Image (cartoon, rainbow, N blue to C red; front, side, top):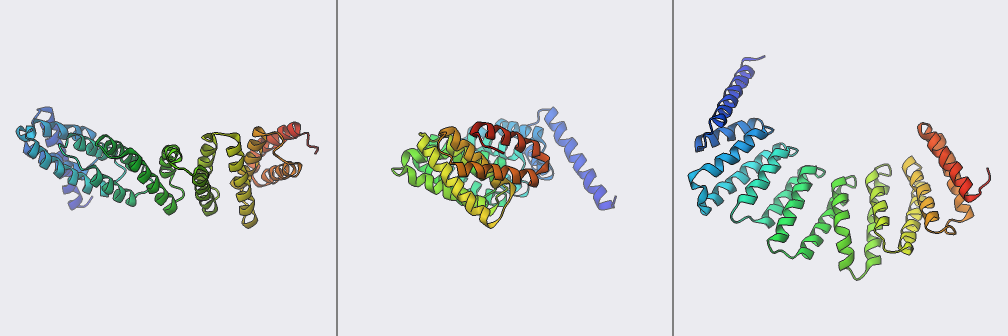
Amino acid sequence: MHEESRQKVASYCALNNNVFSSKAASVFTHETLDLTTRLLKDNTELHTIWNYRRDIFTHLPEWTDLGTRQTMLEGELQFLLELIKSNIKSYWMWNQRVWALTELPKPNWELELGLVAKLLALDARNYHGWDYRRYVVSMMKKSGADPSTVDHNEFVFTTDQINRDCANRSAWHNRSKLLPAELERSEDREGVLATEMSMIMNAIYTDPEDQNAWLYHEWLLDIQESDGDRNRLLRDKIAAIRELLELEESKRPLIELVDAFVALDMLDAQAVTGEEKRECMDILERLKSMDSYHRRRYQDLETQLRRQWNTSN
């Protein structure tokens, strides 16, 4: 180890021992607060020190003055912003930010929503960031913002995020929570569903093997109010997959096409034509060759469907 590295390690160990000794002695001063700042800059994962830092804040004499508390916590939010930029996946920093905003006399939730959007731009799939965003949105509603407007804006935000990265699971998940209310607000339910199908198919064309859009389509089927709506969505899916397969054949779209025929048959035993049943059997044969590891699964499904549809070999 180089001398410079040894000095850094020794300095960190000394600082770490100092802070933990102060914590054990219940020392709550500006000096110990500064020490935790230095230590957490070096290691953001010390959750015990984040807890200690909160205790220091609340034990300072000026904490009871709301104006001073506002200033201190705004400084804490800025400190956290810089740390999160360098380590956005740290749960403890997001947790500390929630605490700071909860204790802030006059939080600015709209500003916070804008900040978290910028942070998600650094790592659009970050789970902690999305969870934190949902927290901010909930607090905006509690603070008097119009819930319908807030939810619609969030719905639009998920559209932007999915258009940027169709594999963003968190964005699809958030969208699934927001769509039911979006459907209730709209006077054109079919138009909204058509837009959802378009987004799903765009994602599938971009990456047919990514599961997020396929799972979202399954969920979309589940929330429909009638079998007629489910039938229409399944027919749209079948048409889109056939079109995709004309360009490129891959495993996931073939599996999804079989699943769509099976789901359609469960809705209406007369919905799947004889030609479509033969198409389904042909796909299962291709899958057995394409994906030998799951050959037995495809064979079992083929046997089940032949029996169900009375289809000959």
